[in-house]
Image (tube, rainbow, N blue to C red; front, side):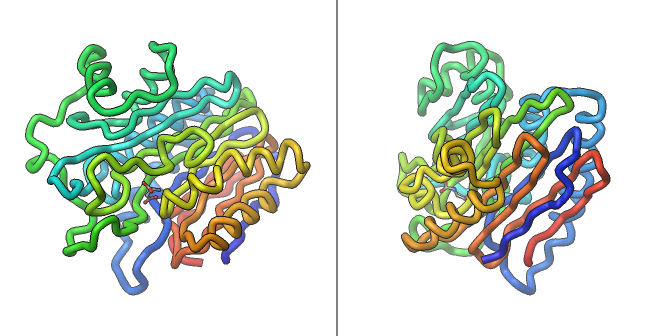
Length: 298
Ligand code: ASP
């Protein structure tokens, strides 16, 4: 298992992004890396200009949804009925507010709708038609012709519920010391209609509190069965583990059950940890002390 830790814990802001666990050795990822590097620069500007962690997390994930390079937003695949059902969640660690959508059909940015669930409803998770109703009422951009809009990032013929590992996510620490996490996904490839993974489940695929922000990627059922994102936070809070040890232990637990994937975690002191047990994880990180890194494999 890869374990990475940034030794610089003095950053006044920090960010990590992911474009999904797993990658195929030998495949050309230059365009993915270039997009992530440019997005990292943009997010650095937003953070240096004192934008809030939750706004930056949302905007970063929206850009990853729109680019079509990942299995989220534009790059998502349809389910076995030919329907695009997308999941997303966002959490503001400073208030513990959270919003999520699952099996959302027909909208360009699931993370923007999740943000509205957080901001304008008393709920945390809206599913299916109810999520779409909110999105319509709030005027979110629609996908009027799904087969023309979506351009699946993975086009090979697929077995049912194949782990595509192209979820996108962001964890952010802003200059006020606030943490936030956001995650968006098309889910497993050729998935069972109605199947919902870990990404929109607060505490499984997404979590932020005052100590740590986490966004997961990988075979979601395993991340749900380990309450992966909240387990990182619990290890930090109750077990007094450092963020890197907590994150690595949770990926080990996922692996012990047979699951593959990774996560990005960011502590309130700026510690970044991006462990994975898959063949790679598209990931990027930056902080105000000059860290700028985009990586896919070890
Ligand atoms: N975790 C996502 C899910 O199971 C998939 C992924 O990360 O690629 O829906």
